[in-house]
Length: 204
Image 1 (cartoon, rainbow, N blue to C red):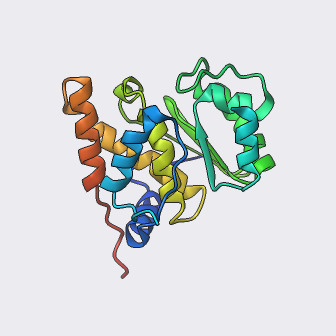
Image 2: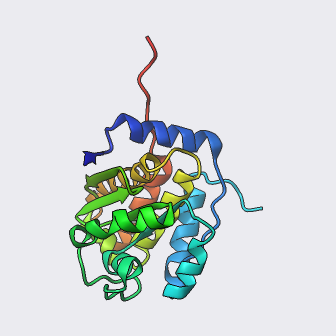
């Protein structure tokens, strides 16, 4: 496994690519996550817009990436998970063995978040950690990460782009951690994500 963080060169390269292209992201999410997802995508500069069986039907369109909680992804991979919508009864470490199979079977990127995030295309698996525990107290906090991952991946190369989205998301949450209360944290998090910048090494 190859770890990624906010300081990784590939994270910065993917973010620069996203900022240059400003792609459109069509979001299919639950109504709880919809407002934050929309606000997040607008804040970071996305371009303007021109259950299980349903998900499998959607997978026939070969989406760029699938991001969900551990329970939902395991249920999708082999039917044994106990997903409960935005909640999860399992950990990202427990889901990790199922991700490669799901990614390989669907020819897409599979990602799960938790204390350790895992992102794989079925061959390469990337990991990262960080963020703030209060992301789990924002009901759409992780759902919005799916939207952010989709729009970053639409501009760059995968699975590095999905890992970049996770790393940038975690860094914004870390920067917002000075906020004392949960709602203040949520506002500060969006603020930090909207102004985050990276710099690439200069060519010699």
